[in-house]
Image (cartoon, rainbow, N blue to C red):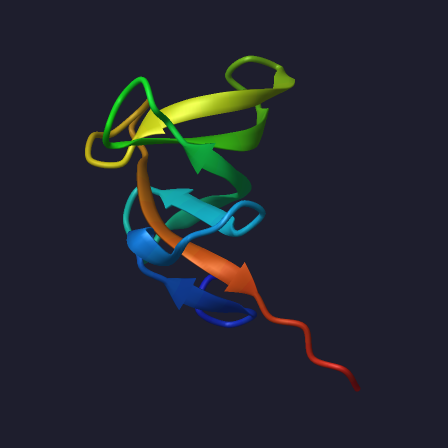
Length: 85
């Protein structure tokens, strides 16, 4: 979906309900989640809704925008594009 059905966004242009795209790198995207908000506790982190296999639950997760978490990075942000047929 990243780069096909989604308009890529810079970190500064993301808004609530945009996609938070995670993976090992930009060519190995594994997870798309819903961005929730910038974190005020940690300046470079974001919060997102995550159907987490790690926690085995749907959680509000918080990750650094700069450092890997459990071997994955936030590789981008996007806005879902809807095309009417």
